[in-house]
Length: 107
Length: 122
Image 1 (cartoon, chains in turn yellow, green):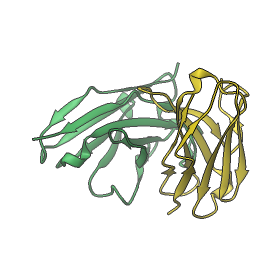
Image 2: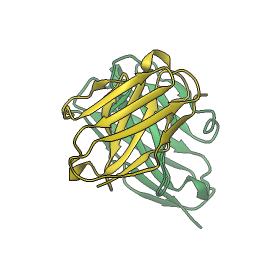
Image 3: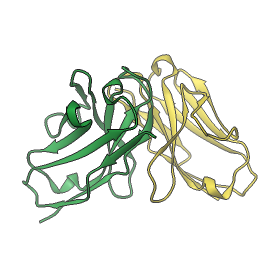
Image 4: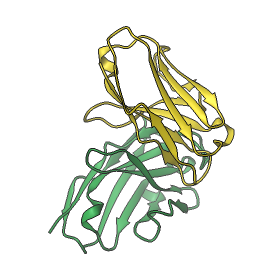
């Protein structure tokens, strides 16, 4: 069973700054089968990135994903106020599917 | 438009049974797996299990196996999550989510239901 650890727990930044969120897996993620989701307060999770680096439909290009193996990163190049949310990584390449504990981004 | 519409909030007593639903529309329901995800109050996301509507094959998270049952009714494009005996610790929001690749157990979740809040309290 793969365990995902996200850091930091909370990230406090200003609009226009760059946010770097980390997701570390306890063992190698199969085929870079890693996704990132954004969950705004009171809303349903939204898929941002899949396959470690592919943006989902309609996601702005200021969101980017990178990494492979056990270390993955979500970067938000220029933070906007609307990016206030909790961000979760997920590995879906092996069972059981696992989510990280989340990183809260405060603007 | 792809939609997953879930049943409404439920309030039950511990020990009672419950079944909640997730109805898919706007796509070929049998072509995409459905997963169920739990979110306890103020907490993160936990995967319960998934079902392939084409053949009703299931896979559970070992942490939840034996406590929940996932099923599907192809004729109504509806997936279900059920408990035979609720516990107070089952109090949470439950989301269904569609796998983004057809006929694939191993895919990210591109569409999510709005969630069903289950409260189990005496």
